[in-house]
Amino acid sequence: MTKPNSVKSKLHDEITTYMKNNTKWFEYLINELPSSWENYNGFIVFSFPSFMSHIWLEAGPGIWQVICKSLKAHSIAIKGRIQNDSFRTPQACLVYGSSPVITYIDNKIRYSWNVEKTMFSAGNVTERHRIASLKCDNEVIVDLFAGIGYFTLPFLVHANAKLVHACEWNPDAIDSLRRNLRLNKVEDKCKIYEGDNRKISPKFVANRVNIGLIPSSEKFWKTACEALLPSGGILYVHQNITSRISTNHGNCDFCKMLKERIKCDLGGKIEVPKIKLSKNTDFEIEFGTDSCITWKHSEWFVFSIHLSHILIGILENIHNYKWLVSVDDVVKVKSYAPHIDHLVYTVSCKPQN
Image (cartoon, rainbow, N blue to C red; front, side):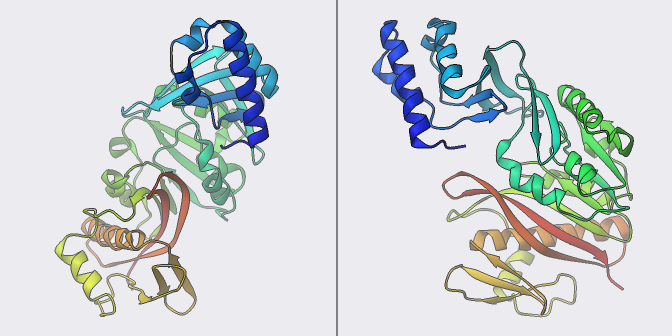
């Protein structure tokens, strides 16, 4: 998170002064001074490209002590890019402090994790809080990518889900998940499935399924559909969408026809909205008389067409009867880069009468 200029400037001045006094300062290091950081109750996490050069480690513990004093902190970790592996393992290293384990309270939920082994995304805070605001009394949830409990815990602690089936394949994340369930006293309401969710996820049990994988969760849509009750339910589909750049989403013949003839009756297979131009956005999409979605970018809407089309096919293949799929909401979680947005599509799925 970006910090106020006064705090950042003070920190930069203290860092450069220390490095110059110890003959460790080089001008190129100015590009590695942090513009933002995460602060978890005094445990500071800096991200790439902050402090990436070996010279910072050569400066010894004194530089980290300067930073801790400036930020009123006790521990520091340096986080590189997330590894491109199945576990999304963080390339992080504790450089100052006694333990790499962070304990943090957000929205009255306790999270604990080892920063060197598992990840915690501070940027997902709006989605964690949105999940916490849902009413899930007496409902069963399947969380296909539970991690340390980012969304599993809000479903249990605040949304009051009856049971969460939590799937996760990273052993380190599972250790943290078990600990966090105990810390929040909801371990009796969660069943953990260790391994590839496409092989171990329960079927036909869920009122809601969370598919919290980016940049794309499409490989797991079939698993999500199989987890839904035969009477239907809601999917939360996470996806990174790139705007202003041509993508392959919605390029099959059916999706192209949908885009070209969006106002036509499609035989009731998908609740297709009407398109109205809006001054402030590319499209304003209405789903009937009571609800509407304002689409900030046309690419967000194009993906909803692709998503609806694919889910219809999956559900009808599973159940051998007609289904109705509608995108009821789309929420922006955060931006990763210019024109790249992490979105969550709320998708209602139900059999046709």
